[in-house]
Image (cartoon, rainbow, N blue to C red; front, side, top):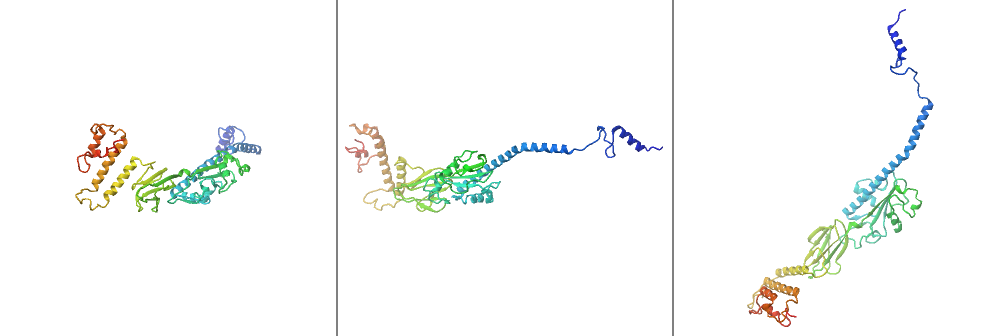
Length: 401
């Protein structure tokens, strides 16, 4: 009988290792046993284990997803509040609650729906405090800053943006009562407001996001007084070329303006002497034809000096009296000004040192102050050689009690 060598080889391999793969023969190195598939019972067991593991891990996954949603919502509300502040400072306007979302959308170049609703499609609420500045005539919204500013201090110019990541809110955009607004304002993070309508709200405090915005710090007080003794009426500008007058006396101009407002201090014709950016409470006074940054409580030496300088400038610039050099008289404005200055200097020194200038019966030449002042002013007295100070040292003179 003829034996096929290939068949014999395969039979030999099969007897040694079992059936090889693809030829009914087991692969090399595997145990010599029959291969079997998963049974239905084993498949059900695997599925059951997977279901149990999924059930155990689902709450943790959901908590992580909610935590990420809360973090994103907080970030979104901060961005919205920042957009409100930047829009107010840039445009010098405050929209009302109905237009807040639209103004933020315009500023951030986003659809208004991205501002009014959360990523989970729950509506956000924009709430105003009616017990503060927004509830007064000066803070009536929409507010636009004009040259006079707000005559009322913007105390408690507050608003709230509130949202939830879990369910719809029990409040909507508007102006809740004072107690209802404060109830939300003072709510701690992770809690719910204590009063109605929150008492029956089924949401959790940790899912409630509250963003508080107070616009009061954005305003600075600007006081402008006119204490000019010549009756000059200066003008001021705020952010524009439109100017208003500053009347003499009284309270002048006293208002509250938004940070970054450009103030112009002008002359009576409206030409600015100075422009500056308002970034704090400030006060200016117009006196002696000039603007000063501080308002003094009285006529200090600085004020008097500035007044004298202003008067001197006007005197020197005035028309020269045509008869000043007639009848043997010689003089001019500069000479008269110098004589006045010397007199004021002597009087000031005496006033500051009195009663130390009292001679108390001593000879004038024995009083050092007398000698000093006499050297300053020289001789006069109607053209004679009499010391000029002697004209003031009689019984009622400046140098005697």
